[in-house]
Amino acid sequence: AQSVAQPEDQVNVAEGNPLTVKCTYSVSGNPYLFWYVQYPNRGLQFLLKYITGDNLVKGSYGFEAEFNKSQTSFHLKKPSALVSDSALYFCAVRAPFAGNMLTFGGGTRLMVKP
Amino acid sequence: SQTIHQWPATLVQPVGSPLSLECTVEGTSNPNLYWYRQAAGRGLQLLFYSVGIGQISSEVPQNLSASRPQDRQFILSSKKLLLSDSGFYLCACPYSGTALNTEAFFGQGTRLTVV
Image (cartoon, rainbow over all chains, first blue to last red; front, side, top):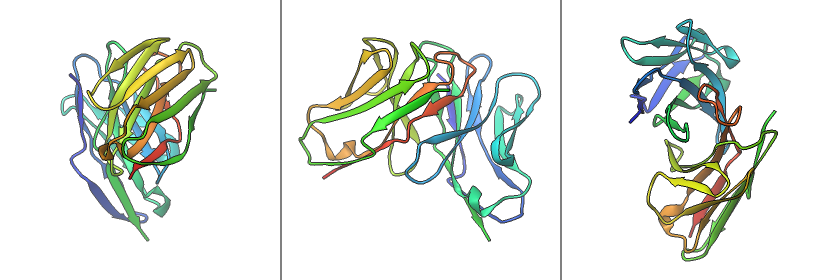
């Protein structure tokens, strides 16, 4: 069975500094990896995905993620954090069998302070 | 593009009362549909998924059930709510219906509080 781990419950960064939100995964076969962001009392919004190709994936709002097959990681990054980036971030992997459901990590709360 | 509608947005129900949450999808046909629950603003737990009308798979045994009476309608129900059913319920659908490599769209969610 597939699984996703987000080792940090919360990440604190100062505005203007780079940020990294960590994600590691376990899946049989090729991974299909996703990052989502959630603002309070809202549904999840898609940020970016890795399917195949370039290991560095660029997404919405200046975010990017780096796929590392040897370390089974898919860390989310941004060169310069904004206060408005403060939210809950989820890493997910899609299972290549019946239902194709997404399996999510536990989420990481990003706090960007001015 | 696809749109997912969920209602109601918030719901306060007493213990032992029934529940019906509805999710409808526009802009696609025969999509896979999913119900997730999020407790205390943390991780998402997959509750049910459906690959077609009348086809429901349950991921976690619990006090809830799901039905898919129409292609683009997915309903989450309970006959008698428990306090532990409180949470944020999200309906989701892959961007292109079923494909493995597409992102999923989420509804805006229903905040259920059982009192």
